[in-house]
Length: 233
Image (tube, rainbow, N blue to C red):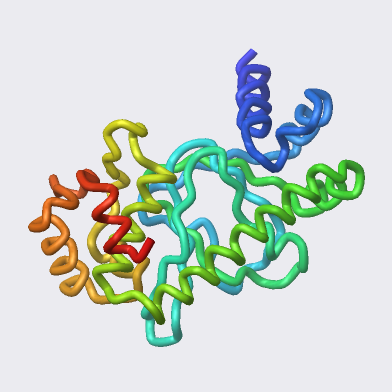
């Protein structure tokens, strides 16, 4: 009985993703049967930059960050991904090592899908391949935008833009616009390519202007139009 319940849960998770939403229940059940569920604690690495890309990962619950590190130990957070999102498409497609590390920001449960199974699905079901290509396109667009931000926006503008993006992706509701992801200021700093003290000062300035309010690690966006102007929109 417990196995059947687990499979139904996995099928629901897969169906709710953009990548596998177009598959019928029979195919989803077969895909779910090939998956391995794993749970990760806060700060635990799911994989490291340079690891083999032998599986695709679907987030069932929790929050992850994608991190690129230098040889000196500096890191930049490229993105945060939450429930029902898919990670690992690039290495899955080309078979090359992982281009970035993935770390749990909070306790996270994920489904690991073997590369061979997903590649087979893309051959049999063009809608899955289309979804993979759309996902990669969004990733390239986001990285291109971030590269431009580093050139054209000052730190305050980058922080304002980051908060708007996090709210759009992860806010509790459209009404409250509260970001409560448990991200430290060091993690926010890694997402905008700055030091923690500099980001702390930028957040204090935004708060002093009434654009945001801060309560611990929770940040409420109080003036969206003002934040958009500060972000260069």
